[in-house]
Amino acid sequence: MKRVLIVKPSSMGDILHAFPAVNAFLGAYPEAAADWVVAPQFAELLDYVPRVERRILFRRKELGGFFSFAPAFFTLLRELRKVRYDAVLDLQGLMRSAVVGRLARADLYCGSGETREFFARLCYTKRIGIPEGISHAVDRNCALVRGIPGITDVSGEYLLPVVEKHRAAALELLKKHGFRTEAPFAVVCPGARWDTKQWPGSFFAEVIGRMEEERPELSFVLLGAPSEKELGAEVVRHLKRKENTVDLTGLTGIGSLIEVIRMASVMICNDSGPMHAAASAGTPVAALFGPTDPELTGPYCREKRVFQPDLDCIRCFRKSCDRGYCHTSVDPATVATGALELFDHRRKQP
Image (cartoon, rainbow, N blue to C red; front, top):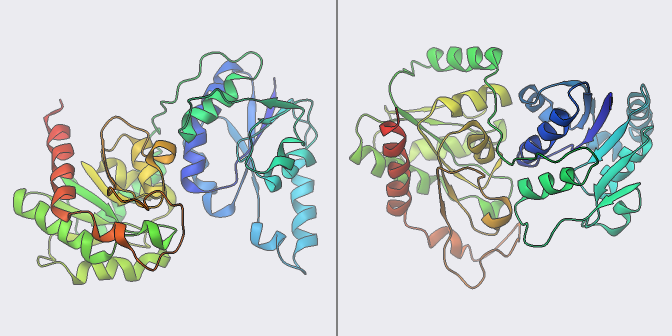
């Protein structure tokens, strides 16, 4: 194979889950280069996977607009048909991603035989079944790639390489805010895409406070998207000791966010994209789970603690909830203790 197309437009965590499979795919064909269909806001993530030459932007908002659809569609079509592909791999498994891949010119079009949307699988020329008992998204992607001719060695482990330009930007940002990276620090990402995934800012402030009491040498960095600035401010408002925490919410790009996370000794977060970035960068993760299932999309790493309350309604996969029981059924002290155990273990390593 000389050129392949990867279709995985979003989200941050989903794209990171695809990296091990794509790395194995490209490793089996060392002469191949890849293009990747990706949403514009996640294009920077592709700096962390080798041999991706073109980033074909999937502008979902424009494609959904009455007046913007035609120009957006024909721009996408033109980019997809600039070259002929030896293979297209749809790792999104939705009807829209399957159609996008079908628009490309390819000899082989691979996708899962168990897509969530039935008609998506009709687009593929090769439908690959996922063996029973495989649940996590990373393992499912690897199983899919393992079904492609010529690929046998597929590992779910993939450590994000350091990207020097993003590391430099991260160091400059921390320096600008007077933060000393030579001292140990924890990263806190209180945001999440769903309301039901997001514990309140006061909860994270209490976790920080309890960790500070036990380890006064530990500093904290708040991270998140620009839309989460108010949440970061809420965490700061509830802190009893504010001088030990710097709020960088909304100030990083994806690359510099990953590099700040990589420098940290531990991360405390909800089920979110930054959680998966920490797992992929090798940073220990203390993660809160409510409506989602950590068996399917939990942090894919060895050093982790997952906190999920034992409730009848847990893992409901609802994006809204009037009761919010899961957010009041986890003790901040338990999370702080678990995060400190990860911190202590990391500090003992040579």
